[in-house]
Image (cartoon, rainbow, N blue to C red):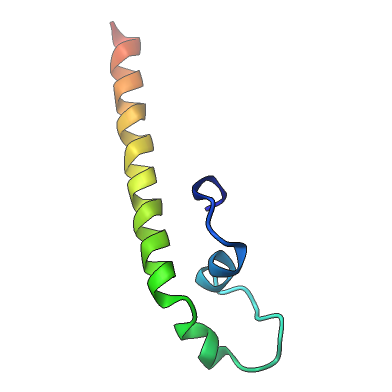
Length: 63
């Protein structure tokens, strides 16, 4: 997630890291939900991009 420059707090909630306060996890589940959805879609797109580049590089190396 660091490569995508997302806020560390959003990434921590998405990765289910323990909350820093004791005010309950139920609130944290819904916290940043829209931002987390966008972040995960961006991450998926990034991984697809890496995979495509990897395939292109592999094909170049075969010639």
